[in-house]
Length: 356
Ligand code: HEM
Image (cartoon, rainbow, N blue to C red; front, side, top):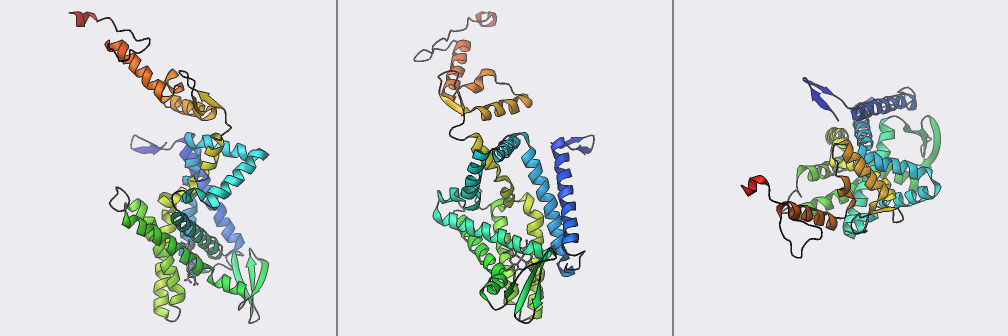
């Protein structure tokens, strides 16, 4: 945790390690751009703004990711995930859960199928656009004309394949970004409409929720404006500048906005391992009812103790037994009589002050 002392800010260990991770990843990315673009031979200087924002996003995203995953409470699940990935049987469970929850996002379908479809369109459209544009912006991928009808694909200086410009693959290559943008418009449009329809509910239209949707919509629409304005140099330039400015805002704000939840989601896989149905559970010290998994209970006790909270036996009781314990203590202290009488409760003898 960052602490303000004597006018300066002293960073805690987690922040220092996160800064180290962020600086290393950004430096590695810069080296990869230099090496992967043939020492900038295939880097397009017109895309320098995009590249600057990509480097800033790499720094911010790694910082947030590293700091979040290192926090003691998240580290419990991060460790469970790392351990699970090393154990062959658990690794398969993790892979299946990742397919179901991260790739197919099936948990959203429980709320509504339309919401699920919209989220898939929004997330896959955004991820596809980033996966296509980042290698182009970094100079890692470019196309070389091979005669008038064929393009060769060069990735990291190596020929990866070729396709006919007028063929079906050529069509997909040249329209992939536009298709991704249509998916983003559909997904972001659905969620915006949903929020506006339910705007009477508190917080539904807060800038935290609406801001990223409006931004993604604007990025996708300005992207779609590029092929649409190819006939006019002025309009194309306007659309190109607008798209660049919006992408810079998106990339720089990414780690600090709601979209940053993408970085946290995989921890859920670790939580699933800790809370797996077969996991050993603690039992209530009062009535013997099954409580949280042993690993989770131990982690909560350890984390609270590290923060100076010690509840002794209290945490090992189920909520009903906790209420009973509190009632028993109050009854003993105040001499109150509960109906039916609480077992073991003895009215306290009046103090000297009360007697006086
Ligand atoms: C939601 C995410 C995004 C969507 C939906 C999107 C969509 C688009 C579309 C539809 C185009 C036009 C393609 C064409 O001309 O056929 C485009 C162009 C472009 N995009 Fe994006 N984009 C997104 C994010 C990004 C990001 C993150 C970057 C950079 C890292 C980026 C960099 C570019 C570049 C360099 C161009 C070409 C610009 C030009 O020709 O001047 N985009 N984008």
